[in-house]
Image (cartoon, rainbow, N blue to C red; front, side):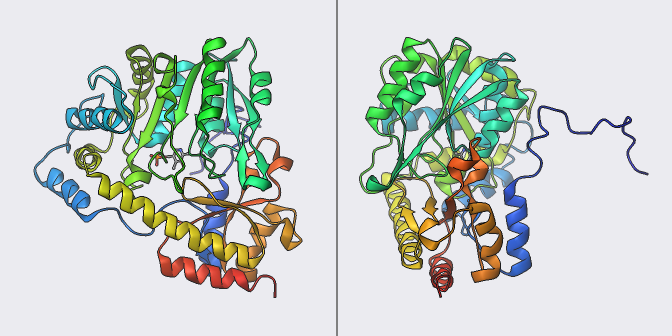
Length: 398
Ligand SMILES: *Cc1c(COP(=O)(O)O)cnc(C)c1O
């Protein structure tokens, strides 16, 4: 029997109507229908380290994490997250009061915004943004205020306009939502840009939520500077990390936040009513993964850099203007040199034209026109897949 709904009122509430279905569903369906190579959604097509997979199997067999783990996360993982932040960045967090394990970074984002915002609070976020930010701000009753990252073709990166950022902050601003390395542009915010964001946060007494899930994916000597390491920031920053991108197990959904006790306790209050807990056995495996030697992280980064160069080179040869990313596993291109200007139309026809699926960056913008000519490709795929994609893209011009 069909579900009954009252009169003319649509089932989806007003906070969420603008977020119908994601572009990823549409494009993945298109990829399947046309037999295209899917460089749309950002997930690796090979699993992470065998020994970490085995660690998960062991945990499962040994009965660790098969029942509800502790609300804040298993002690082994909280200790490993704290040790990681200390070893990599010199940041000290108490595993008992300053670390919270979440169901991926996605839940960390949702719980942070639901916990920290009052209805009507403004959130300044860097546009284009990861698709869950806008929806989570809306669910929390907040108002998003985008600050657009501008293309700088000269230096082949997107950069933050610090005056625009400053102008975006009002008396109603509650927090700044930052993401570096940045999806989808591949920009790694510089120490100078981050220092300016930090100074603004201190001056206007704002909280900062910073999504650093690509912290280990920076290339060519670019430096990932955690927001919490900057002056005055540790006490006002919620830092979000995730095992999905760092260890190539995106299905495990193990994420975490670090921050001062007051903020972590607040986020935990929201988190306990979302999933309560998640990913029990995987938490033990990720605790081991975080303890892997630097050689793992170096090899992972080198491998992704090779893949980046392979795809970026192919896109350049195909005639795209390429913003070669300093971080993440996405490359943003400008399609105007191909005589195109509408990324949506381009991505809808690309599978038919050459058997490759990409994502129009416009979906990550409120100012859609700003993102219109940009298209994002993921390069976290096997080398042979990227080579085939590059070969197919080359047929575009002809
Ligand atoms: C993939 C991604 C996430 C989600 O991470 P999960 O741990 O899989 O939930 C969050 N933020 C950004 C920028 C991402 O690219």
